[in-house]
Amino acid sequence: MSLDQLIHGCSHNDTKAQEQLYKLLSPKLFSVCLKYSRNYTEAEDNLQDGFLIIFKKIGQFNFKGSFEGWAKRVMVNNVLQQYRGNTVFEIVNDNIPDEEELEIEDGNISLDFLMKIIQELPDRYRLVFNLYVMDGYSHKEISEMLEITTGTTKSNLARAKMILKEKIEAQAGNGNFTAAK
Image 1 (cartoon, rainbow, N blue to C red):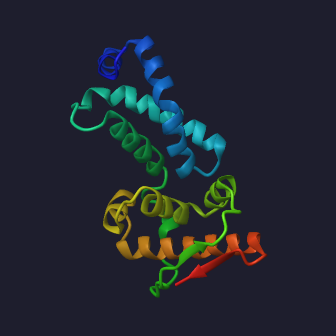
Image 2 (image 1 turned 90 degrees about the horizontal axis):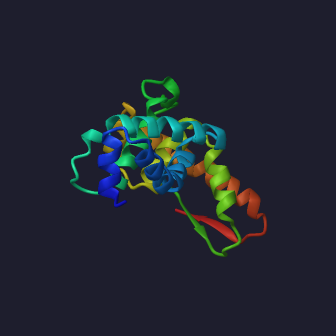
């Protein structure tokens, strides 16, 4: 079946079409869930919940743009819904540190290590970091998605980068990684 046929089948509650669509998209959408979740188990739960929402709202997809992009947006919104209105985004102070960039001079750092330390970030930092750095949303878009101020998104991003920098430098220990301003 083509993707369009799967979408039409899912909109008519065809369980075979739902199963095929799940098999087709679940690997990519699971990586989205994993990026925004606290751990692997929570990501699995978010994937299942997200697919239930996709199947429920699939009739709202209007075949303009990518279905995969639409499904990803549904999945991200599902995960973020857990954090909206939550006080985890409060700013400690208004002094936002300069943004730091991390330069890795040697390729010794593994993707698994990076994913691990990103998942270890506090919720507020992990969400803003992933939305801004990994998915390219603007601070304005993030503030609207999470229902927080743009100052809070900037502050949380700066703190996330600072924590990641410290963890990478501690892991490297041999001078292969440097932070640049």
